[in-house]
Image (cartoon, rainbow, N blue to C red; front, side, top):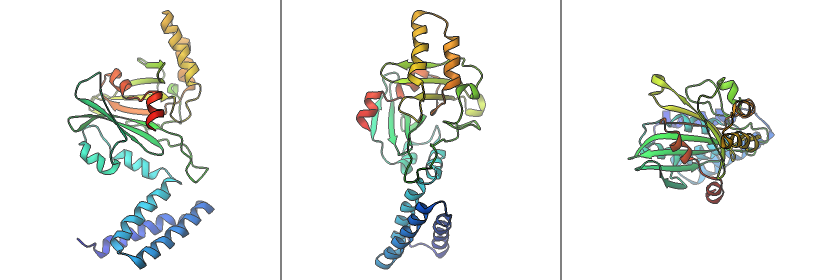
Length: 268
């Protein structure tokens, strides 16, 4: 079906308006090159094809200067979504693993420049997911770390410590062997359809800080059967979550969904 005039006008105005903001000399150069490319494509090809490709190119340029594209993508993912619906935006996963903890579940991994998304899927529907932020600067060196808003919260990843999110940890999980990580569950109750929110810090995520040393101190005390209050308080005061997840109250399942150090380095 051929596009109507209002659709063409709207798309053109969105692209031109977004590119008219002078963020830097890099942005100005990108804008000039982008508009020149569009003009050439219009001269040689079909406007409808040009419009679709130019929007894709625009999104790629925008991702180097802002986090809007990634934030909008994550906003469209919810527990209960059909996998086929979500993969219209995500594309196919790079890696798929079957759960050993729960039969019939699989973990699907989608690595983007700024985050690693893990979908926990059962019979074609999403039963949980994890968002792991990754270091990425793009072409614009002053771009801040990707810090998406934590669901059911007014806080963001990478911007505050565990102590600032919650005064104490009722439960937590950690490991310092195949993957160094720390994770806390927060039951959401009725407001979150009785799902559980998970906040975590993983070694291959954004700015893990002293994660390894802090986790090992807590793990050492656990192994000896000693109290971990002091070490845990220090960890929560220093570390910032660089990952969030939504899923069931089965913490071992969410932990299994994390790629080990070896898996992450092998696949990505």
